[in-house]
Image 1 (tube, rainbow, N blue to C red):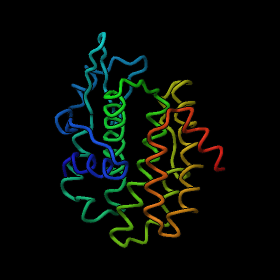
Image 2: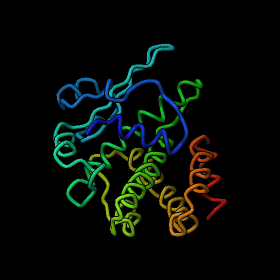
Image 3: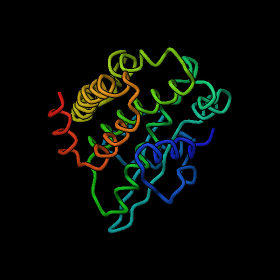
Image 4: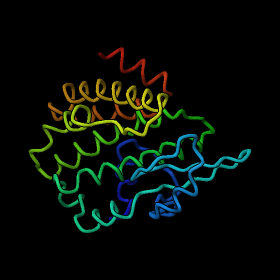
Length: 216
């Protein structure tokens, strides 16, 4: 499986275009990822968006661990998403989501927050998994919200500010995706759902949160 397939999936959902191909920015070597990670609290993870900004130039890499990519190659979720590969699919989708959201906003010279990246990625995972499972007529689609937003644990290596950011992203994404499920997914209203998602994608962090709270 190539990451560009996930990039195309998200670009189609949100009706956006990014000329860069995420596969050109992919690294899978954990040692290289550790070398490139200049964050305040570098930690082991299967997925990272690695950034280096110098004046107006932004350099980035998308790290997805080689074991994740190998699993997706052996059991391509595009053809069959199951308990065997859904975790790896979400890891890869999160990396592509970060890359795409940052690249798309950069084209408009818009800055993004780390919280904004995580919030959008949580929504992207829910929509991406739900869309793929429904396309495959998979009964697992009914349990996606619980699996993503309730049946999980936070990384013990997160510092206080990171933990707060991930908790907030999970909280707001869970509220938003529950509402999407009730209003659109359960009623199979795909065109209206896409219109809603595209409006959400184009909002800033504060705009996203206001939109979520207004619908709650």
